[in-house]
Image (cartoon, rainbow, N blue to C red; front, side, top):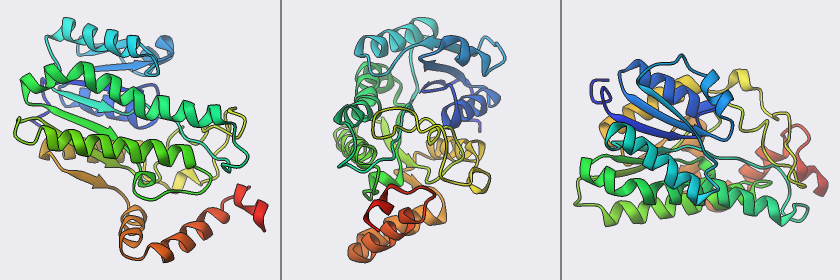
Length: 270
């Protein structure tokens, strides 16, 4: 991937899953990579120390942390070519049961964290005619039961990025989002339950899902080719297509799919 080599790539949420895999892949291809996370020791432990890696302790919920992270990267390497807004959390609980603090946390992390980082990196990325990326989800196209806050945050992300892309259409700077579909990662294990506690287990067979490494490769190729959007997995593409053309059918199929999850909260109605 020659276009990645020597580029400065900033990735939020680099402690696990797609963020960690994306950082590792970018480093392999010669990029200068800056990652942030709330636990600096864990973050640093994910990678072999190299001059091309910069780890920074930051919580994307904090505007001040996001501003400091971007400023530190710019001071170290002079600017940013690519921002990947990857930090995110999910949930699994019916809206009628969930504490509203859970919804707020998801919006703060998944949406506002992206807004803060994008705001402070924008002058640098504009100057370098770089790329701003949002790691979204099929939940950004189609509301998913038991995941109201997550769907809301991803719809918001995609609306924001689409508006920003249109604003920057003739600037030379590219804006895109990627929807991985179900990918093997830690996001479901730390997904919020109705009371805000970590779910601590996944309802899916992670071994049958796309790996984070495969996902990272697709994202890097998409950045190089400046794709408008990427929806990964056949299941994800089918869900987006069905929801656009046959929304009523999509309601029933999505309901059935999530009803059949182990310990599905939808079983409350059956």
